[in-house]
Length: 276
Image 1: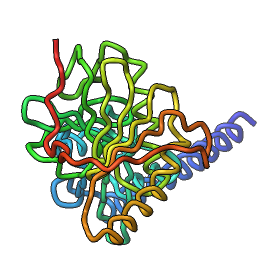
Image 2: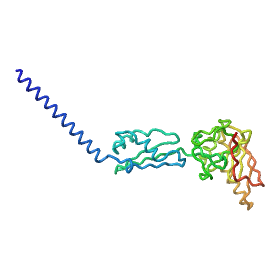
Image 3: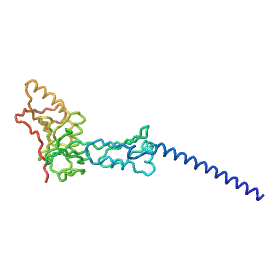
Image 4: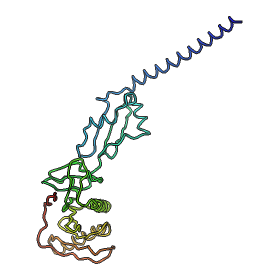
């Protein structure tokens, strides 16, 4: 009876070893196929596109940020599976990062920078900032044709940092004006603040005095129609006049305001920001 038990144990042992060997063989085969078909070359199979112009990150920095797992990011199949359910880790100044894998196993990484919403004219340069108030780029000309903020005093104007004014609550005013302008689909050339924090908006040669308040949605909503009527007035007169429009008392659409023809031309170049 003892001999029979030993034989049974031996059979079970060899059977288990056979099953284990088969599993190891299958896993090895899968690993080989994965390595042969889906292994990527980081230098040849990965391309990076940065949408924006701040130049905060290089393509290599974006690639190293996304492709950094020692096992997963060696294989296109695993990368495709992972980014189907998960997003790339965030980066400062970057709104989102997308990772796509095509049928040939090529990986396309696209980084979308937070877009600029307006700029500050300082020391002969236009400093572009995003909706978080971060200065992301400087240009000698306003290539993006974004609103120029003038008249404020700044405590900090440094690249890749949030700019600071002597009254930081005014940044929310700027955001409100810019977003209302974008919603209405027209461009503002300049957002000017005076010493009393009163806002004047420049649209072409026309100046809109809006006064001091937290939101300017009503006035801004009326500007496209006012601009149309002023163009019609100029066409009737046969000349291209500039106007000063006082809308400080406007509280709702339809309120009265006046538009006075201006004889002297407005300044085409914004003044440098006031820095302490």
